[in-house]
Length: 235
Image 1 (cartoon, rainbow, N blue to C red):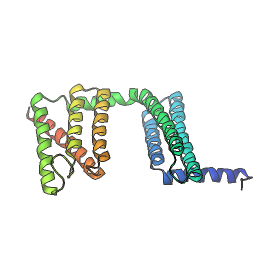
Image 2 (tube, rainbow, N blue to C red; image 1 turned 60 degrees about the vertical axis):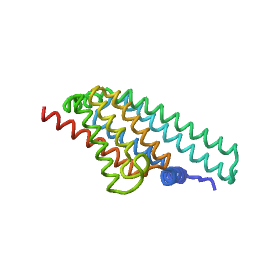
Image 3 (cartoon, one colour; image 1 turned 90 degrees about the horizontal axis):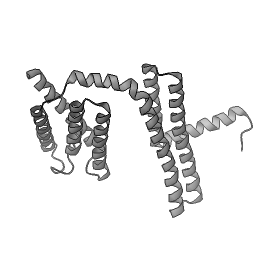
Image 4 (cartoon, rainbow, N blue to C red; image 1 turned 45 degrees about the vertical axis):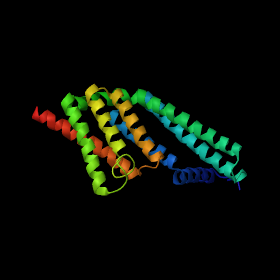
């Protein structure tokens, strides 16, 4: 029955939001992103206009995800079995969420970068730019550590599977080196994005589990930073 009181309508709306958050992992990811943006806004002291623009962007993404969830439920109700038109409806709704998320990401970058990038650049400056020798040694050390860990775990082959992911380790090691060499936040973000894409491909191909990929990423970053800092101290 259609609710007649405002409080009942509000309860129905809240139940819909809770259902989407409980059943859709992407909705949970969007809520987490919104929480992180809120923390950034509190600590960075953005202007009221910037806060308003960020709020609108975040709300639009959440709105798009809610519409996507409701549309999926209707499509499943009308067409329980597979149908090409049902697929088109779901894919198009998911595309709307993606467009909203890209717009929010661009908005967040344009507003928050001027607050975050100076701090990020300062941290990179403290670590310093690695030498060519340190770079080569760091990459070789990552390869050696990955081989040892794979041998100890006894799973997978040198180029497929095993603990940790060698592709993720090398990708994030290279991203770390690029970040420190350029000392540029935007270049760092692009390098890290490529490393994430490489790591994600290992998951899509089912060569590695999420745990193996995460361990590979941590291994690559940690070994690279350790070697580069050792060279800096020794130098």
